[in-house]
Image (cartoon, rainbow, N blue to C red; front, side, top):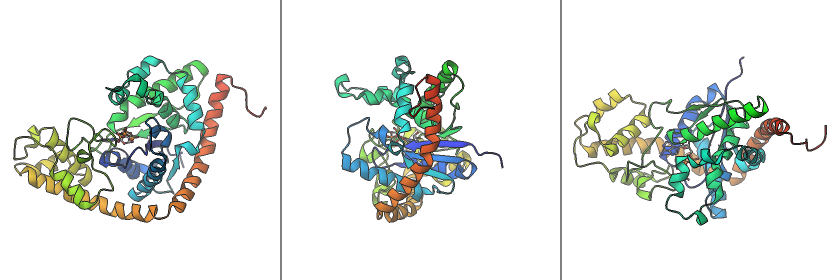
Length: 337
Ligand code: AQP
């Protein structure tokens, strides 16, 4: 049987996961996992780019792993592990940081957005060098495909550039990965419900605009019913403003409907009806996931055991790539020979 392509992706435990993480990342992972050999990582080192409450970070790390499994990540196709359990991530990140021109990092729009308005004294250097750690995460597994949301396109370009730069200077070492974005037709860029000009995010969006996967049904409906639209009252898909377009996109992503089917469903209907239908399908999708998460988090020992088993699979793969990179750079082997 031909080797299946290797897939790597991850989410930071930097808050409770939201609808954008689900539609842009987890759902495409689940949909395609049987076709590939997958590493789905809880990237806890990335969460440290901003100061965190230690107890909360630990809790959110377990919760995020539980969300992966509850959404359908299947251990027979996919290895789930925590980034900091595989030390090669931090080590390769350093090697790649040294190879990354400052100018490349300065061009990253996510850094500019996150550091915006903050004094340089208060922004951790990790927020700036984060893309080199992300490149290390991906390159360690000889990854062919990286399924992510649209917001990660620029970081993936940098990963590809870094792999090519390393290969050019030191010889063929890394596989140059391809992004996998928007393959499901909708949901690769979910916008905040209270401000449809900004991306829905764990830390950048206010509570009202961010649909959490673990929000109870009444909160889910409340958030959707309060979503910002515009001064119109009837849906006109061809001329929809950002708020209405975002709701239609969410509905399409959750139902798998085509743009034509969405137009047929909502054209000429009131905004209220659109919102109720989005809330209905959201609740229908998320309730079973929430029930499975509740079962899993009730047994943190079992989560830790599963994560330890995942790290045991990931560690030797990552170590082999790291060793190749170390040799290429002229670093002496740690134990002779
Ligand atoms: N709004 C979104 N629409 C579609 N996909 C999204 N993703 C994030 N937001 C959306 C995708 O989720 C994956 C993991 O993201 P992350 O948690 O590692 O980092 P992020 O993109 O920075 O996510 P957040 O929620 O915005 O986190 P904070 O606020 O902590 O920075 C990625 O595949 C991403 O594309």
